[in-house]
Length: 314
Image 1: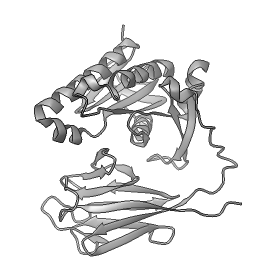
Image 2: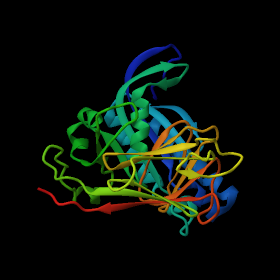
Image 3: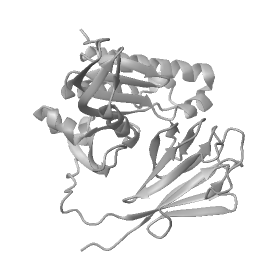
């Protein structure tokens, strides 16, 4: 029987799990509206079934995303693993020509419960782990790993260090290996104290004749919007005067939306993000569009790419 969040306002510690379908826009392009809508619906149903199977509560569904809570970290990992096994690369969901994948982020921490919804910094951290995850991954935090049983801890590896909105310290990022073949070739954990200096990164932004470089050899921040004082000026009815800004901190590039209509990020690998009065990290290469989705190569598309520059280690 699934545990249920009460409507009374209270604080409690739970494991929060976000799961969403990766590249849903690509599904609509490949399958058409009806086929894609049905595929996403089936994915969401599988996520909800797995949540309830392992004692969790579905807090809300948001399009192709589900947010759930679990009484223990093990329950969340069992459910997340079940979701991945039933959805990622399951050809029966969409046919052999289209591959469906999901990504999952988890975090254990205190939340405020009110009217069957949850609030607090722990929710933001769990959502941040989801944005760190790639297709087919389950990503979590050190706090959550500490809550896991020995069996699950044996399937965890540290893969990165990330920043979380509202926190000054960096957070260690862990991948949970849900496929047995991955567990046999686990990478060693990152030694945060003795690791050599990481590769330097630059972010290159291109829009028409305007090119902006952020990072070690460029500026530390840049703004985008319709006002002429922006670093990248883009005119449009849906674009705010200062629509968004991008900040560079410790080799990471964070896009912060400050607009009315939001900002869209389309990565070259098919992953997509919509940010409104929130932030997301830019990785790889892709397109940033303000106010509405822009097709690559069109007048409103801002192209970005992360360029790595190796630095000597001690």
